[in-house]
Length: 201
Ligand SMILES: N[C@@H](CCC(=O)N[C@@H](CS)C(=O)NCC(=O)O)C(=O)O
Image 1 (tube, protein in one colour):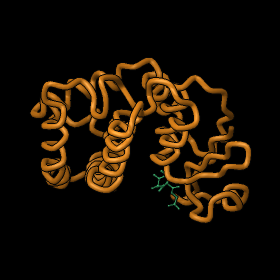
Image 2 (cartoon, rainbow, N blue to C red):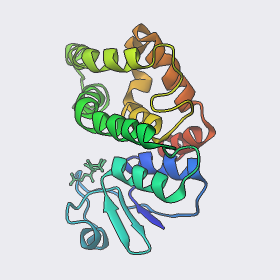
Image 3 (cartoon, rainbow, N blue to C red):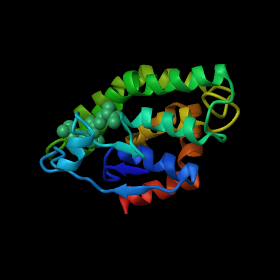
Image 4 (cartoon, rainbow, N blue to C red):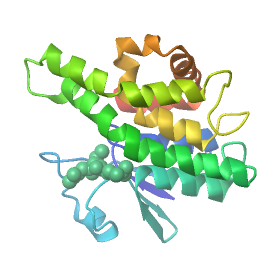
């Protein structure tokens, strides 16, 4: 199994998943030039010309969060749904992460870490404020619960937490006590710590 994409890209989400599952894989560290992937071998695999891309013995997939659902389905174990209701919640939270949350968390990450310097504190505050509805939903879903889709950590938790990576540097997360405690649980896992080391050094 080959995973294409440097750890500083969304491939990070799949590195975390692969480390959770403990399956053997080859990490092909395809990077960027001016924010574009220029490696022709990647272009041949993925018409979007983006990372991550997974090649599992000829099963070639793009979309980081879908790759994690595939890895859960293929490998099984506690990160996979155990019944239809858990499956529904894993798909629900994964799609929520990609559609409702990611545009907001990406905007926050851009304002805080990637916008040209000097970075505008007002833009950072506005991006943080824009996340409030979604963080409220997440916080409410976690009231009285440790995990999103089941009574254990699953791919749903991993996909949502991974989309919230930049919020590890969001001071305001403390206002959402359930979500903050859940983030701490997710990111305290040994596989998460290992994936962060790959990304952050
Ligand atoms: N929705 C896709 C987004 C993939 C994506 O935008 N990847 C970035 C790196 S994190 C990329 O390859 N960008 C190159 C480009 O936009 O040309 C996913 O989650 O996998």
